Amino acid sequence: MSINQLICVCIILVAGCGSSDVASVSKPQVQVAFDLKSRSAFTIPASINLPSENPQNPGSNLQLAMYCPECDRWYPAPPLEQIHRTPGVGECRKHGTPLSFEGPLPEQSIPFLDENTAGTPEQEEKE
Ligand SMILES: [Zn+2]
Image 1 (cartoon, protein in one colour):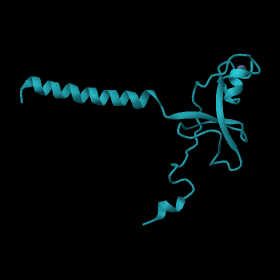
Image 2 (cartoon, protein in one colour; image 1 turned 180 degrees about the vertical axis):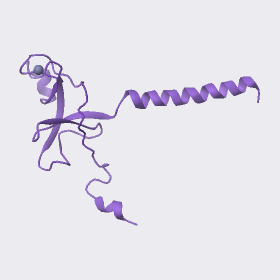
Image 3 (cartoon, protein in one colour; image 1 turned 45 degrees about the vertical axis):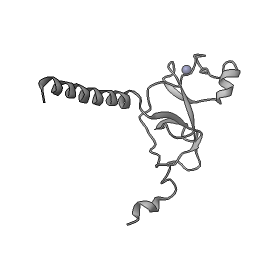
Image 4 (tube, protein in one colour; image 1 turned 60 degrees about the vertical axis):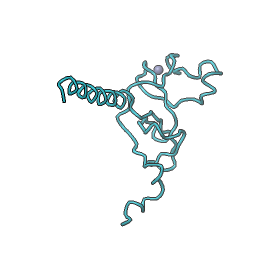
């Protein structure tokens, strides 16, 4: 193998690794949900469809959250169709600033079981 071929292989390897790292780091697969019972925001896997029951707080509902940069906190998001149709719905009630789906992620997170194993914990103990 010549030097040129060796360099070529190295570049391909480096480029391949670099691009996959960037893709996994720049887009965290999480979203922010608001627990209506505890009145707190959590990060949850982006694959979860909201609203959903909180697996760690039975009887409570998780709902999509929106962030007010003025309050520095998350609020339960109104229904999406209301945000677009009703003036003021997507705004902070204190500040009147538009709420955003993007903001600093809450430190608390809720680990959801994989959809395939949810509701069947016995599977983990099978031999
Ligand atoms: Zn506010």
